[in-house]
Length: 377
Image (cartoon, rainbow, N blue to C red; front, top):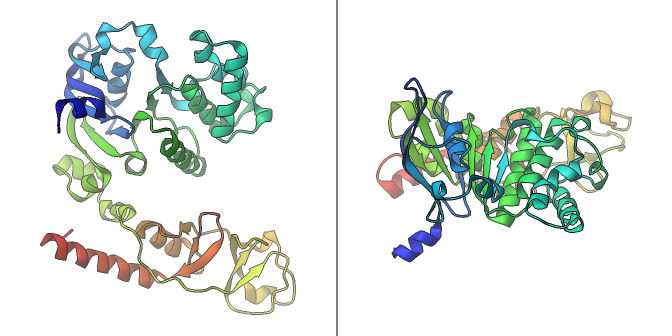
């Protein structure tokens, strides 16, 4: 690769960066790391490993003791800290919103600091609130009037308001419940597919790291880089016992998230909401008028009467058509009927999968890995 091409691909670079606090505590130790342009790099590790400090070194909220951090080849230490921060989006836990400003004015903050007109800043704010999935009527509300998930969406919108090339995200979804967290992670991936920002994200959750990261950097206590790799390789080939222990003993299951599912799909008899149950089969899948799964019912006790929402068992995740082995296995095992529900991109039922057939596909994928590599995958 030529020097020019390498420079164009590099966005954030830590070059032998150390941060030592008064008293001798080392938060970051000789860190050399690149966060490529247009990708998500995730910093993960136990408490005290320096991941948040590393993040804050980028926008100079913390100054390094030694080493350099560059953005597109420019040393951040040579830049005005204020101008540097205005060109970097920053998302933290709870959104970090100004409580005395409306949602709209929170999102307008950085554009106004950059000298945008009020009309231009307001237009941009309204566009971004739509992009992150917030209804227009929320623009005039205050942060305290929003749910935790809505506040995080506003925080992301505010970080994107001036269209910065770099986003720093510090545990952005840790303060919300698991269902909302999963939805926000999906939203971030959707946005990233459209916007191609260079994102440096901190989390303590290895599942979040491997879901979101194009590359994952694992840090040890004391701020030393233990391994940086693509998520699939990190799970398959941990560099040492520390990394293996941190990513978890179930890393083999997590690795299924990087393998496409080749599993037989079966047709499933369904009942529509409001339809009278005639078949006494134990478990039956209920769909709406558009064919989107709503839940399962134990049909035997419902014969002769219409199915209502109160009859539904909502257990069971949905696997996307063409998705991963992990998604298909989870759908099958979490379903009360032990039949995994598979839907298309619009959420419409396309079929069901059986756990045994998913396991057979996992075994086949493992055999293929041995055949390709000459050793266990």
